[in-house]
Length: 65
Image (cartoon, rainbow, N blue to C red; front, side, top):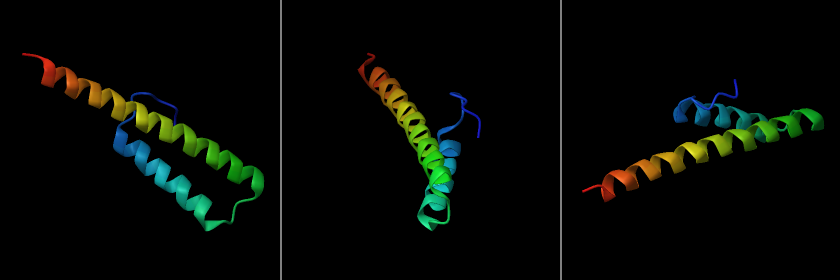
């Protein structure tokens, strides 16, 4: 799961779902759970940035005469 800003949104969401499943299963030791949570936060931020960029592109297209 590289920290690549060019990764597709769908791939990021898939990785985020994997992290959430790991955390929900509850079998991780505390330090691994904290690491997984940190990965999840980063993935969530990446996904949000992609959504924000897409929204800006759509707004630009809509406002362009």
